[in-house]
Amino acid sequence: MLRNQIRTYSYITIVVSAFMLLMFKYFQHDDLYLAFFDDDFFYYVQTIKQSFRSGFITFDGSTATNGFHPLWFAFLSFIALVFDFGISLFVVVNLITMLLSLIVFKNCLDILKDNFNFEDFYSSFASLFISFLYLLISKGGMEIILTIPLLTYLIKYLTSDYKISSLKLGFIFSLCFLSRLDTVFFLLLLLIYVFKYRKEFNSLKFILGLTPSILYIFSNLYFYNLLMPISGLAKQLKSSYLPVSNTFESLISINPNQIIYSLIPLCCVVISLVLTSILKFNNRLKHLAFISISFPIIFLLYNSIVSGWGLWPWYYYIFISSQIIFFILIYPYLKTFQKSLWQLNIIFIVAWSLGFGVTKQGTDYDNYNGAKKIQNICLEKDGVFAMGDRAGLVSFLIDKPIIQTEGLLMDKEFIQLMKSVDLEFLLAKYNVNYYISSFPTYISENKWYVEEPHKNNPYQIVCSDTLFQSPQDSVIVNTWKYYIFKMD
Image 1: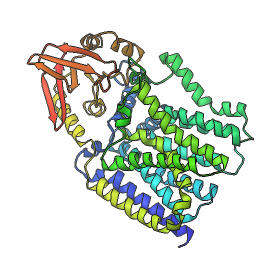
Image 2: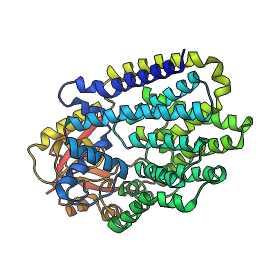
Image 3: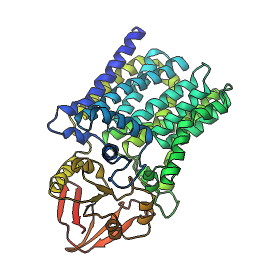
Image 4: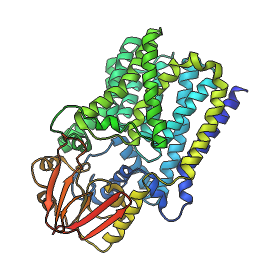
């Protein structure tokens, strides 16, 4: 089979898979397509909507916030400016994801075929799998839609035989960092490779390329008195830096999609560790392997120690670089079967996309039903609302001021208050009229224990209280339970 045919069939496979995973939902009735987006995606959308109205960056209409990754926020803001906040915005986001999945494939193909001189069948097989991973974890609309294409391009740029521009390299580093701020772990590790193997590297030009990131950090300090987004600070409310198991437990799941984007890459990391330990590779590849394997390990340890929150699908971008390295290291053992692997991979991707993209409902379908019921209840209520877990879609649907009670889209003052006052006092300070609680603890008919955020590890600091009243309304959808308390 000719090289162009292999690539053409591979591109067609990605487009077919992307169409099933991203576009079929728009053939369903009403606004059911919303169920297929991650709840956190709506934090971006609603913050942009409120910011357009208010003239400053805010989620609730009154509190200035920086609780988002800046590049995706800016990108979405431009899309919303052009297409507004109807179905067109969501379609455009999915079309961009489809386009970028092709770019991820091309970047990986260039790494394997051009930079490491692998055959067309093998390079296409591996690149197809990585592109499919990208689609699975990006289909919910989160910032990694930009992060993964940027990271794969960065790896492609650094592993090529061509002379690099330090200014351009710094700018790519900046874009990666601004697309998702915790890429800083990978970028710092990658500097080791740059210093050692890129003799043309110029520090001053590189720092000049970092100007967008430097400006972002200083703007955070100036406007918010923070180095990081407030969402990062909110997730670090722990009383101890002892590691917790919750982060690692969330890696393991029998969810079909998570098997693909979590368990398989995790196994590949282990295999890569073994291969680099027992086999001889050139130093350049060995260092690159060390960096790519270390990144997910450091990321997971950091989250376990500092945060303790579980991992959501978009967090699994951490395995993209290690997955590329795995395919490089394992090549001698798979090259004999490369044509069959490529063919089987095409069948697998199309079948999986059909089985879990077209015929399956959104993974957060219960969340959608719950949010719609809350929307119907809140149509008759005016005032300020407050909600923690899964407030994204609710905020978008009711389109009224919502205080995010986990602190993810608030400010530094709110986080300080969470650590020092009771929840009812906190809600009163922000003039909350209705509090929507997920899974409060029933004590008696007029006595409920509530906490924000939901405590998921022994060291997590929560803002809690006992409400001496009955909920005014409740919404129960399968395992999800929401109770609405009137606070004024």
